[in-house]
Amino acid sequence: MNRKKIYYALVTVLVLIAIGWGIILFVLFMEKSRADFYGNLYDKGRAPEFSLTDHNGNRVKMSDFKGKAVLLFFGYTKCPDICPVTMGTLKTVTDSLGEDSANVQVLFITIDPERDNQEKLKSYVPYFSESFIGLTGTPEEIDKVADDYNAFYMKEEVVESESGYLMGHTSSVYLVNPKGKFVLRYPQNRMDPLRIAEDIRNIL
Amino acid sequence: MMIKILAAIVLSLGFINFSYAQAQIEITEGWVRGTPPGTTITAMYMNVENTGDQDDTLKSVSSDISKSAEIHQTSVDDKGVAKMEMLESVLVPAEGSVNFKPGGMHIMLIDLEESLKSGDKVEIKLVFEKAGQVKVQAEVLGVGDKPE
Ligand SMILES: [Cu+2]
Image (tube, rainbow over all chains, first blue to last red; front, side, top):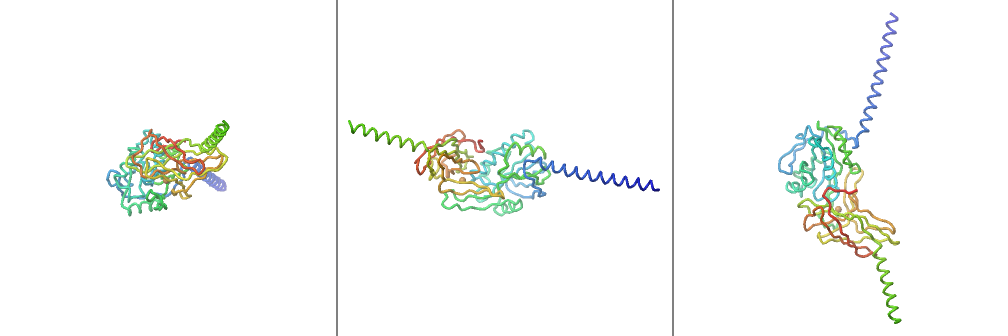
C-alpha cells in the first residue's frame, strides 16, 4: 500500500517535470521562430474582407487570394518617392522567389481614389510587374478598407506647391499568409527584398 | 606696357576668383527616376558636396523637362506614415555634403512634358547662393530602382 503511494507520487512528479520542460521548450521554440522573422510580428488575426475594383475593372475580394501569401501596400500613383521605391522593392522580392512567386500576390491599394481610377492604375501597377494588382474604389470604399486595415491617409495641402495635393499615408507593407491571416509588417526601414523573400518562403 | 601687365594681373585674379567659386559645389551621382506611362511627376536624387570653406545654400531648382521643380523632403513618422514637405532652401555646410536619396530629400519634377525612359539624360539647373547656377546631367534609371 505504501509502495503504491510512493509510486504514484513519483509518477506525478515525473509527469509535472515533463510538462514543465514541455512548456519551457515550447516558449523557447516560439521565441526562436519569432526572432527568425525579418519583418515585425503583426499578430492581428484575419485580414479583413474587402471588395474593390482591380486595374482591369473586375471586382476583387480579399478572400479571392486565399492560398497565396499576399503583400499589401497602400499608396498612390502621383507619389514620386516612397511608392515607386516600395513597388520596386516588391518586384525584387517576387523576382527572387522564383517559382514560389506563383504563390505570392502583390496588391497595391490606392488611397487617392479621386485621381487613381482604373485606367490610371492600369498604366502604373503592371509597369512594375505584370503579376501585381492595383485596386481602387469609391472614396467610401477606400475609406473603409484603410480603416479596417489600420492604414492612415490624409490629403496634404502643400502651400505653394505646384503638384496639386500630396498625400500622407501609411508606408508599411503587410504580409498576409495563405490562410488569410496577418503575419508580418515591414516598415520603410525594413525593406531588404531578399530578407522579405526569406520570410515569405518560411510562411508558404 | 604697365597697363597691359596690370590688366593681366587683374584678369588673372578675376579668373582665379571665378574658378574658386565654381569649384565650391560638386554634384555627383545625379539620377532621375523613370516614369510609367501617364505619370507626370518624378524625383531627382544626387549628392551635393561643398568643397569650399564657406557654407552655401541651395536656393532654387529648375528643369526644361518639367513645368516646375521643387525641393522636397520625405519623412516617415513612428507610426509608419510617410509625408512630403516642400523646403525653401537647403544648407550645404563648408567641407560637407548633403545627400538627396529615396525616402529622404529629392528634387521633385512636376508636370513632365513626356515620360522618362531608363537611359535618357536630363539636365537639372540648381541655383546656389554663393556658387550661383550649377547644371547637372542626370541619368534616368528604372522606375523601381534604388541604387545603393
Ligand atoms: Cu516630392
